[in-house]
Image (cartoon, rainbow, N blue to C red; front, top):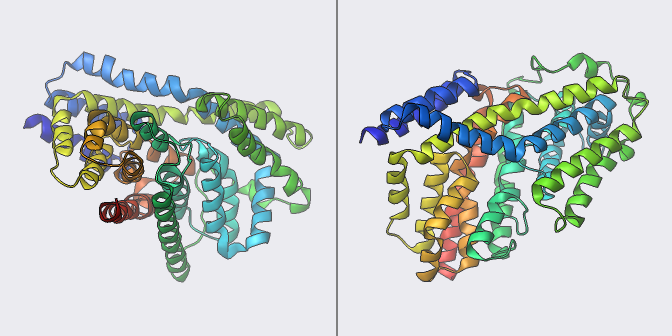
Length: 434
């Protein structure tokens, strides 16, 4: 009983510390200590093996992705290409649709294969200009980016290359386009619901007179001093981003997804330099600062380390067995179990892996259609995975320069509450039809 209470306390404490502005590193270490002590785990082993095992796993898996993505974003920013794209989008769609432009841009990149963890590096230079020109508060920005990256393109749209859609296909033997009708239906509901929320919030914030205020890390003087006539051609500026998408689509079967992203980011960065050689006045500074920005991966890695401690705690198995033992219709039981496990681990891929490997085949044996089970569990995994203690939320907040207290509520309504409701709507449709 103490272990279960300790596990719950650690998760609640991590959320509390995040809202109080405590950094990811001390928060993860404190909460891991709570889990280790209350679950009777060997103290040194808990940190040296479980915590550091998770930390090392994430660093070794994604370090090159983070630093190359951050380098690309810095090159786009310093060359003026990101600003040129942002201003061109504003001309096409108007300042009133700045949020829509950013949602679509983020969604296109993630659906094209850019990792959820790093897409913020590619979109932030564009986002900051869009929000400044539209006079929108930065508190709205984390929600917009999270919605564009971590909802319909991650879980529901058929053929998504994101892990949340890949894992069910590997375990259940389905294709990435499993249950396309259900997936498209869920995607439409998510997009309409999320965009309607942001339209409402934008109207409410404007009525209150709340507008754009730069963060402490935003070099807003650079943007204020921009002479648009000196910016690079916006259509040429689009070329590196189009290149990334085209390369991901054309070479997706040639390299592993991680390898492909790294190659794409390096090649796209070289393309930015080649197209804007004269505009990048201090090329070495751009390279050094861009690579240094990628060290934000540490904030995510320590939260993953905490997640590994949680997964190895004896009490965690109680939660898993409870979730897996829910005696409902197979589809409803699968959705509930996936939501619970993803919420505890703070990871859609982690929750899916644990659930499907444990009982995926058992649910198929009970009569569940593998394709429908694939789509429902993928959608369900995209609900509680973005609670405040999720690693991706820490890096998103860090890059944008907004804390949990200021911006998390927008993430909650569009990436937690709404996907959960839609997951259950799709579940009841599946029960009725399949």
